[in-house]
Length: 283
Image (cartoon, rainbow, N blue to C red):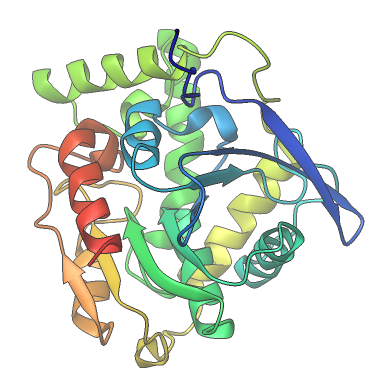
């Protein structure tokens, strides 16, 4: 008798749930039961931008839910231009699935969103993982727009994906890691997500710029256990922000900054990151 196929991120069906006038597109995989891990992705990302190695490694042990927030990818609606509004939309999605308790993994902009949700909805969020991200008003965060546009231009001129310049170092090791990551993102061939619309990208850039210019918030109000990590050479959200988060969050655990790694450090070191994330979530 053939064993039943266990879906992986490259072939799990894309679903939709409606709430607050929005059709949210999402993918859900992993064992039923327990507290699910909700993924909050980075600037310009859609469902197909999550590294399948990270998702599958975590989903082998616990339920993982990735989704497109309002106006992003295949989700309907208009993308808001503040992190707070994005966080509240994410809560609408989570509750539309009937979930009463979740863990959050926020990467970059998703980490900003995770911080707001954890503070505003303390009974909803059990634990948070913050990767390649920083606090409101953190140094260099307001430069993301300029860096992103320069990388996009460089990508056009060199015919390379801008993520190679934004997410990875330009060392031989970093370039190789970047190429391998981009190959993994192409493993899903059927029912791929829609690319982000230009208007949504602009709204996200405005939200990130506002977050970077915002007055620092009182992180002591985020009382959930937090796992914090990054590469040691993050150009988009400078790595010092990761150390700042770890120092200011009351219950934080820091994964030492990944060596010779940038904004995509969790993808470059996906095996170690998935292992440490599972250990943290199951503690």
